[in-house]
Image (tube, rainbow, N blue to C red; front, side):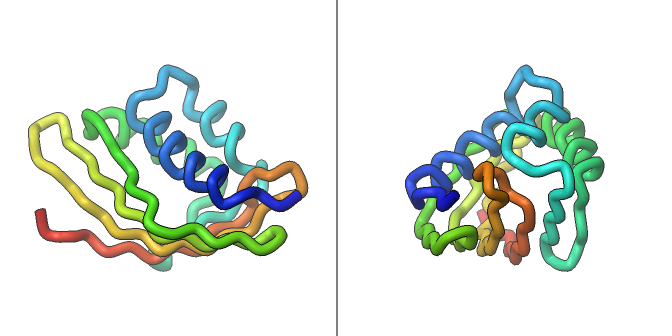
Length: 124
């Protein structure tokens, strides 16, 4: 099932917001957007479903708010690519900006099955 580019842009924004300030259980958040066998490789670090779930607790503890500016999304069948910038304000007041280049594969139900991502932290 192909996912329209607009839908994937919405995913990038919504998933980041739910990770930082959502009330849902982390496993529910991950399960909503990713398959049980998801593999997310970011800057060479591999995260499976359990590690994605575990990643949410420190994000919620350390970040106060987040915004995602989606610059480009391209989809072709089950494959997609996106370029976006994540802007976060941390609880202690510092700010973080991260450019991301993401390539993904979708399952037939539209959830992400595989992500390969490269990021770079921008000076703020």
